[in-house]
Length: 178
Image 1 (cartoon, one colour):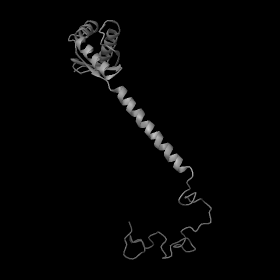
Image 2 (tube, rainbow, N blue to C red):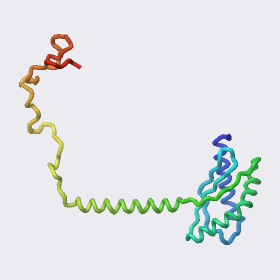
Image 3 (cartoon, rainbow, N blue to C red):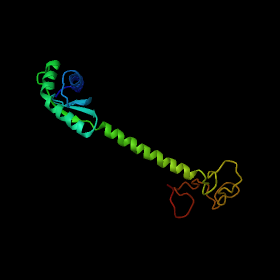
Image 4 (tube, rainbow, N blue to C red):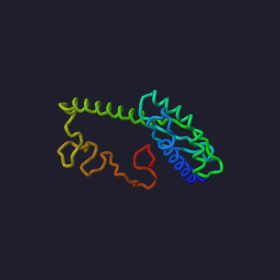
């Protein structure tokens, strides 16, 4: 096992080397507008996965994938030469679905905005089902639940909340105190 920081640094270096090679050295006409988005390497530094995106149609993406597959050997030898590691990792190119995911999320957000606008239009002329302010306000003259209290503020049954006898009973019959 290798230190995670070393693996991350090697993955970043491989990403730079691959991007530079695709820009300057690989002259395949099938290669479209490629952007290397990420590179991940296994903990044993044997396999590297290079994620890329291609701007264009599905046909151009397929041609770019074929061009990358045919240039894999040249890219791997350059990675081995520039990194200086004992075993050059094998390279796998994977199409990154970042653009499709971003477009899908944008579509979902647009649908949510449209639904929010519909709800706002429906609520524009609506009035509340109950009172406009459903909360009690202090000092209001509404009848507060004083029905079960006597004028002392105690319970009408004569219970004041204390154990007067000290026997663990609360003064009411049949209920031990808790």
